[in-house]
Amino acid sequence: MFIFKYSRCFLYYEGKMTCKGICIRHKAQKPVGSGRYVSGQKRCQICEIFIKWDGLWCPCCGYRLRTKPRNLKYKAKLRARRVKEIEPILVAAPVA
Ligand SMILES: [Zn+2]
Ligand SMILES: [Zn+2]
Image 1 (cartoon, rainbow, N blue to C red):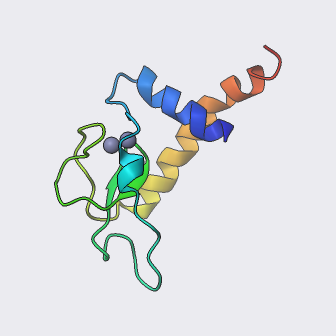
Image 2 (cartoon, rainbow, N blue to C red):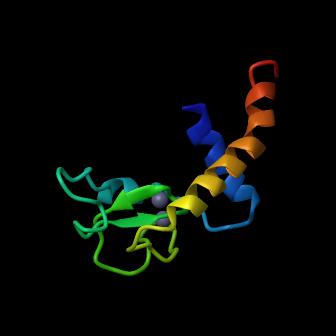
């Protein structure tokens, strides 16, 4: 819950486009027996959600949607970096 909340803040501070909460209405269920991209679902890296949407652009934040899986090695690396930068906020939060 907290990681989700603060990762959004982190993206906001980077000066990127933000999630307006519209994507939740288009949220895609995890397909059984096949991959998300194979089932025609698209990923928005700003909203951090998989949606069912025909367009190339996110109906929520306006960012270009991802239709193919990213390089897994790079993804893991990025996640590790992001968690590291969020950590000080998470530690400080309960005290304040
Ligand atoms: Zn969104
Ligand atoms: Zn989006």
